[in-house]
Structures are given as structure tokens and as C-alpha cells.
Image (cartoon, rainbow, N blue to C red):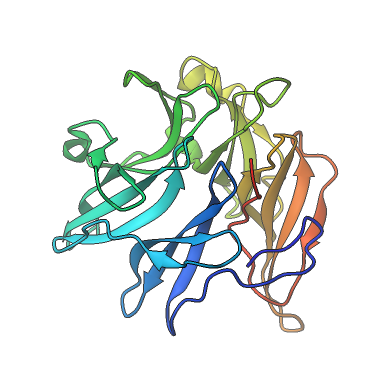
Length: 291
């Protein structure tokens, strides 16, 4: 769905077939196209789709996913709007844990050709996977790494392959988004979602300029309360100017009211929280327009 900044004039952009789900929209840096993930029945196998910003020319990209490839997930753009990054999931799957043999980042052009691997060699041997790659204005990449027995962390990877971990494993930071700002207090600031000890989910930030996990842990700032149970807050996304964050506020249902998942916004420092989309639908994974 697409709406104006006040949540009005909502309209469907993609039209999935019966039983399919379209999610994870990503607007291209030049503002002309949207990448998305389409999960097809019966098992929710992921494919990467693309559509023009006006809803025309909707189609799936042929990324060559054939057995033992099990799906293409979580697409995003390179800064030139001419290439896509995504996670290619390859089986077989561990019968006990469900882990794939490989789930790492790849890059291709918009025809699905000229593919190359982005994740470092050998991370599968460490039982690690990588998702949600995106490029910072300064050229480095922010991504999520999942490692068996450790959890989730946000990674900053330089163009020469050097990298550092930005969040402690215990935080289980997921779905990071790097601020598009090139100056000011949000420059190099990463927003992410994190589960909390009381069973909720919160939105927090960490600077990508910290030098190691221990230093970064001292600079994690919660924008929504980690003690907001039963409400949960997740799926954060920066505005084009890097001053506002959109996110989802989820309220579980009660005997008197159905559950609600609505889109809210707040300032970069967690102030001025306000609802934007409060429809009866389950709204999630917000994305802003042209950056």
C-alpha cells in the first residue's frame, strides 16, 4: 500500500495472486521503482519483485533460484538504483534446527544477471547468515548477521571488506536502517528493532561510528520503552531527511477489541510520537518515498 505522509489516499501498488503476500517494500534512490519480496504459496517461498512507483510494470526478477535454492528474500537497492541486493537461501535444511545450508547476500542487475556474492566466504561454516543489506551515504554497508548459538547483530562493512559488529549479540538487533543524513545528529546513526526481556519489542539506535561491540553497547539509545508490554514497537525506517522515523505500534487483541498494528512516526530522538495510519488492516514494514 502507498499513502501520503498523513496516511491518506492509500492505494495498492502491487497485486499478488491469491494466497501470496507482498512485503518489505524498498523505494529506489532515484524514486522511480519499488523492490519487494513476494512469498508464494503453499510454503511461502520468497521471490524478488519490482514495480514502478505508479504501480505499473509489476514483475518478478529472475534471479536463477532453482533447487537447491529455496528462496530469494529481503531485497534492497544499491545507490545507483541499477542493482539489487538480496539474501539467497539454499538448502538442504537441518532437520533439527531448520537452518539452511546457506543464506547469504548477493548482488545482481535488474535483469537478474551479473550476480556476485557480497557476504564473506566461509560464514556458512560458522553457521551464520546475512540479511537486510543497505548502503550508507558514506559508502559502507549496514546489514544483519544471524549466527547459531549467538543471535543477531548489526554489522558495518567497509568497501574493502573490513567490518565491525555494532550491537552485542544479547541485544538481537534486527532490521537495521541507516540514516540518509550526511550532516547533523543523525549522520551515521542506525535504527533497529530489538526484543526486550519482558517479551516486548522496542526501537533503538546505535551510532555506526563506534569501534566495537562494547563501546557501541554504551551508546544504544531506546526510542520506545523496553517496558511497554503488551504493546510492541518494531519495523523502524528513516525519513528521506534523516529527521523522522516511521515504525509499527502493535497492540494485542482483547476480548473487547481486535489486535491493531498501525504506522506511527517519531522524531529521531524518540520525541513527538504520533499515529499516521490507523486502519483496521495489519500495517507493517513502512518505507518512505524518495530519499
